[in-house]
Image 1 (tube, rainbow, N blue to C red):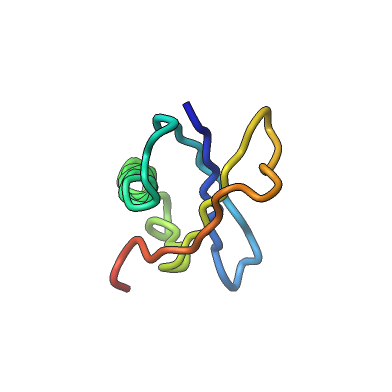
Image 2: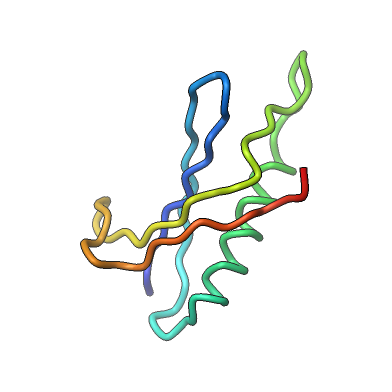
Length: 85
């Protein structure tokens, strides 16, 4: 299994969030992208709205390959849009 990190950018607040997921070693970049978008949407939909509503991060997320808690040098890295706002 390969591990990936999603970096969420919350824009003006200057905050970042992180989500992690795993895919099989033979997964294509398209499959990894699809899984990243699914994980991102699940994270957003599962948030408690709070007083001011749900905090909405930027529509583009960064996905990086990780291993043992560190970015893999020369590993898979890409940006993708996860929503249409």
